[in-house]
Every structure is written in C-alpha cells, then in structure tokens.
Image 1 (tube, rainbow, N blue to C red):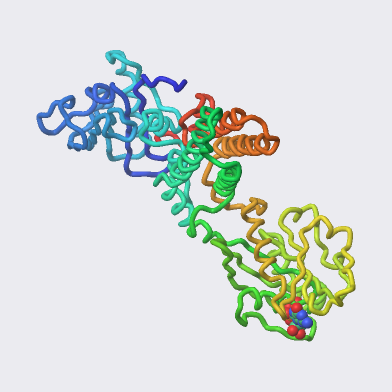
Image 2 (image 1 turned 180 degrees about the horizontal axis):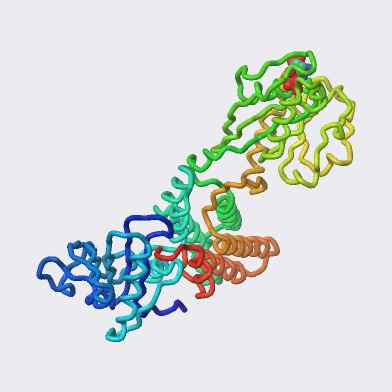
Length: 468
Ligand code: GDP
C-alpha cells in the first residue's frame, strides 16, 4: 500500500550558502491559499483564478517586519506540475535567511487553511512525483544523481536514467518473462491434448536468456558514455618481462619503447584499450628493483602511486624465468579481486614444462600469453572485460544506475529465475516453473516502483536534499 498524500508541503528550495535569490516552493491543494496573505500581485489579479504555467509580478508583504520585497510568482496547476499537485514558487531577492523568514510567515498563517500545511522532508517533492505516477523509481534515482552530479559523465548518466532507459530495460525483461509464462501456463491447460506450444529446448533457452539479461543489467555499463570512465589498469612486473611489448601488442600499435636491456622502461607508458564498450587505460610501470638507483626514485614514487590507484592490476611475469612474486612487494589482501596474473613469453616455454605457480598466485586468474606471437591476448582481453562485467572492479567513482534496493530486487528476481531453471532441470512440474517466473516479474516491478513499501520509499527519498 502506498501512502496517501494529503498535506501541502513547503520549503525554501534554494540551497544553503551565499545567494542573492530565494525560492519558496509550495506543493499541494492549499498551495495558492497559503500564500494569499503575503503575495500581493502588482496587477488586479485573483490568485485562485490563475491558470497553469503563468508567472506574475508582485511583492512579498511582511507587515510585522514592515517589509515589501519585489517577487515573481510562478503557478503550475495540477496535474501539469512536477508533483502533479498545485505548485507555486515565489522567487524573490535576498538570500536564504529572507526565504526562511517568508516561510515562517506562511506557516504562522496556516490556521485558516483546510488541509495541513507543513515543511517538506528531504526528497518529498520527488516522492510525490513518484506517488502520483509522474516518474518511476528509476527516474527518481536519476533525479537524485542529476542533482548530485559533479562530472560530465555523472551528468550524462543521470540524464540517460531520467529518459527512462533503465525502466524500459526492466519492462522489456518483464515482458519476456510474462510471455514465456503465458506459454507455459497455456501448455499446462492443454496438457491433456497433444499440442506442444513451446518445446523444452526453447523453454530453457528463454529462461537462460532472461537470466543473462538480468545479470547484464545489474553489472553492465549501459552506454558508451558511462564507459568513458576509464578502468585504470597497471601492468606491473620485473624489468624485461615484456610489459611494454604487451601494451604494444594489446594496442596494436607501437606505443612503448621495447628493449632487451633490462630497465628500459623508465617512465610510465600509457595507452587506452577499448574492449567491448569499456575503456582500459593501460599503464606500464617500472619494476621496483630497477628503481633502487636514486635516479629512479621519482619513477618509483610515481609507480607506487599508480599501483595504489589502479582499478585493475596485471601482474606480468616471463614464462621462461622463475616466477619471483616476492620481489614485487604486493600486498595481496589489498588487491585481492582485481588482479590478473599474466605469464608472458609463453612462446619461450618448452611445451613439456609445467610452469610452477607460487602459492600466492594460485588464488588469482592466470593467463598465458605471448606479446611476440599474439597468443593468449584475446583471452586476456576477455578476462579483463569479465572483471568489469562481474562488478569485481571497485571504482571510487562508479556510477550506479540502480540504488541498493533496486539492486537487491534484481538479485532476488535473478534467484527466482535460477530456481525456475533448477526446477526445469529437476523435471519438476511446470506449475512450479510458472510460479517462480511470475514472482520474478513482480520482484522486478520493485525496481521501477510498481510495488514498493513505504519504508523503502522513505529510505530512498531521504537521500535527497530538502526542496527536491
Ligand atoms: P619490459 O621491461 O617489461 O617493458 O619489457 P619489454 O617489453 O621491453 O621486453 C623486453 C624484451 O623481451 C624485448 O626484447 C622483447 O622483444 C622481449 N619480449 C617481450 N615479450 C615477448 C614474448 O612474448 N616473447 C618473446 N620471445 N620475447 C618477448
């Protein structure tokens, strides 16, 4: 059950801090009556007769303070407003303190009003927009991100979310499940006749596709723009193991200096590699043992900085040498999830020899490649891409398309599909499969707010600032 909306709410919508302009925003059935006493139009106009989307000049009169401040009133009549309720906004000169004084004044005069009038809570305007069906939850999340966005890519993402892209994808998955479910339920109805509406093969394929769609939606960046957030990828290893050669081979062009004299890579070499829609910024850094000489101290410091801030670490070893991981001074607990061990020069490894992997390395994904022949490079790219898809790469600035409640709902709906697949494999009756599929549809509804508890709504909208 969604909460009922009754009170008229108001706030100073301009943020705290120095400002020369104050905005008082009021939403609800009493929006216009609430400002009757303080807003005096310059022309002879009755406020209650105003249509939607009009603005009129006038002034704010606060008799107690003997103040008359020029102001403009904007009126948006329900349902043609953000909240789908009557909204009035008073724009006036002066900063937030003046705005708060006007607010106090309006609140003191509330006795004559029919319904309640009170200060709004954080995000309450947007919550009303949601409750009245103006936006769905994914779009509400977008509005929050839009307000908070601090970079172009964050802004791009918020605008994309706002366009309803996420909701469309969810609805698309819901439709796929519903149509599959319909087939299964019809098959149950016709089970005594010899009609096959959907083959077993088709059923499992469709369920697996749906499961993959959900996983992709949970983890995958949704546009190229989002992937403009580069994955900082550091190739790290002793001198001469072939880091620069690997960058060249991955980029398919000569970027780094390659030499068979150990220690040629003095400075960081970088290049951007695009895999799928994800950009990896590759950095080749000097192995520490070459950095013992004072001339390399600066490079070493730079290298340590790059290691710390790396999203993805490619530990590079040469397949024709003993793997000396200790000399790399890696803190394994810190890097845990985001390491791929790359054993290069596999062309120099005799086929019969089995490369002895040290204990510390066994927990990591290991890939054998040759920068010289190109062997294994495609596999390495796939592994790098998979790390991003699986959400294993922690980015401080990760842009979240969905909030934690929505992600939780997607996870639960994924589990329902998994259950349906398991029931199918255990040849359970089709009723069980259909039941799980129906539940998956309902749970997905939570992502766009078709089904939501008030408690969750409160938590989501609390994260907004007041006035939004
Ligand atoms: P870095 O110091 O780790 O950047 O190593 P470089 O990329 O400069 O390579 C050192 C030497 O190893 C060069 O002579 C490369 O040609 C050679 N090398 C790099 N990768 C391979 C490989 O996969 N196979 C073979 N046989 N040689 C390689």
